Length: 67
Image: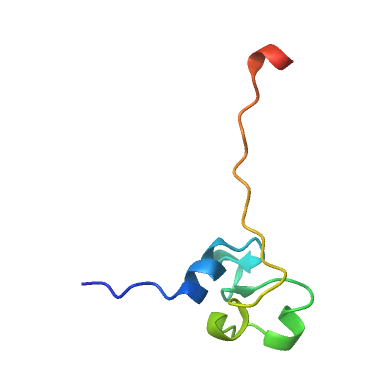
């Protein structure tokens, strides 16, 4: 059975500043966090109280009638 995802990791995975593993080490890419945390990023130390966190927006489809 898989262990439940910790809240900090879940928040990190949905954060707009998360740098995906395809772009190098998975870490926070925000310009104020990256110099302090580096690429050996620990979500438990940063994500629970992060004031920079904003969830990614899901793009809404436009109505064809509005164009």
